[in-house]
Length: 241
Image (cartoon, rainbow, N blue to C red; front, side, top):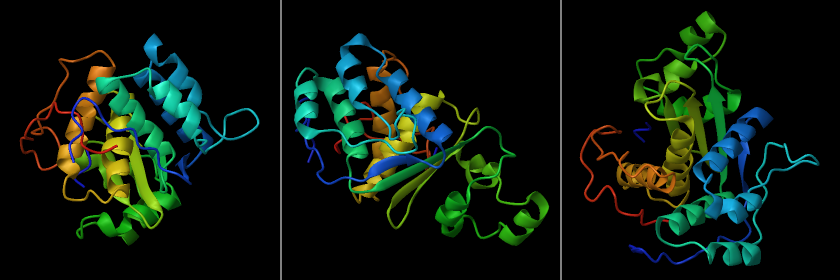
């Protein structure tokens, strides 16, 4: 995965006002995020919450995720608790945040990333990569060049928010878990300025996602991620919302 006040079991609900959006580089990218959220919150106890996650366009198939009404959200979140409440709140806050969290998916390591992805990741690529030669050989920047050496997924800070690239099939976890790990564990936290806790936040977020999905034994300790170092209390609910 990307290298880049505790609230315990009763997290304070905080909904950012005047938000921007989660946005897919393409409609298909946005659909993948939407599908992944539906998989993460597939349990019937999230049926009301799932209805709040919608996209732009007359058919609801646009690139942007619509902001969630605070009053309705507060009512729906009132029926959740513990891990469920924490993750639902993080997702809602990411959708309603002041940042633009853009995301794109590639289907193989040979796929080229978007121009937005190139602009976002350019300053974060290792110095030994010859961008000019890469473009000359492949007609652009390959997904493998950007995220191939970091587990198939990466998220970086941009001027307006964050940008995420996920290489489908190139990650150690299922796509929905990777989407949550990158978009929430890295994207949301970078938007909040939590640069020094990226490793901790991402590990705890991934573990939270697994628990909410009913897989409490699928927990990582940090040695599989980023700097490959153990995280203290990796199963704790993340501190951010």
